[in-house]
Length: 476
Image: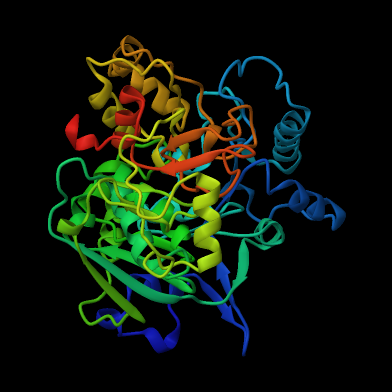
């Protein structure tokens, strides 16, 4: 595929999003959507069954099955994965995905296999998600893969079927936004804190209709794990997706991974990937710039990810100050059991969750272990530590992090989405307060009546050992 004719010779004025999007355009429908070619489709067990049934009903085969990968993650239990799944709904969904993958000749990373985990963790770590790609999945947090320098976004079940049948999708082209964070992050401040800070500034709808390119000193200094966390949370600002231009950090991360190009193909790929930068004269529909010095470890206090504060700050006194509708602000505080103007430091914690496609990678476990080393889990805190994949689990054990965590009273569970959402056994009981490294704090997200505070692995670890919400900088 070649760029659209009107773009030729305009490389210096194109955004990176334009470059990738234009290269994948098959045709533009007059006064309608764009037919976009898709390089990679990921399928999990929750949003794919109807798509497969639609394919069967029409007597269709997958157009390019080698570009489709299937993996159960939402419903997989995080214990006893070698035994039958107890919950009948979860068992049926996992079994249905396995059968569909077999019937349609698709790669399937089965539960309890060495390749399994959360699809948004496994895709990058296997080298399946690469710079310059278009990547889709029936899951909103597909934006995670944008950290690789790809255009990645979530789609609906009918669109999953569309990609299976044609390897294309009909999409309206989003607007472009560049968010730059300059300066240097302070002690104890992580990519998760940056994302929570941006959400509090933009609100959960501030990037609606945009595809976000993250740039600036802070973004360039982030590891791939940090970039994956940042891009994962793009959707929580309302964005269609978010990405980071590939650089040496990206190339070093990809090199040698299972599905990454090898030999001469690697050299050719890197040569192309180096061109994936926004031009010096590129014009974005919107540009925002933030100062890293303004960001401290963050926590949420409400029932959407944009309702956040610095860990030492107080909850806003008014809905206007919180950039929230009055009714929503009052309802959120009532649900969480908090008061306007209240500081949350010292608030008792019942549960701590480390994991999810947001913070279930090896770097997150290293961070958590750095806080708990030489300390003990608070006796009245239930902690679920869930690797994002079996590869992460192996690395935890190779690095001896398991011994550090177990000595502090923690247990490592088996990979899966776990307590990010209440689709498996890991449900936070009603009324209990959980400090979670996941991506959403909606009412009942982690279980009916559960209360969620979003935070970084460092802040979660600090809560786990003290039993209360604690500034992690006191323990770093």
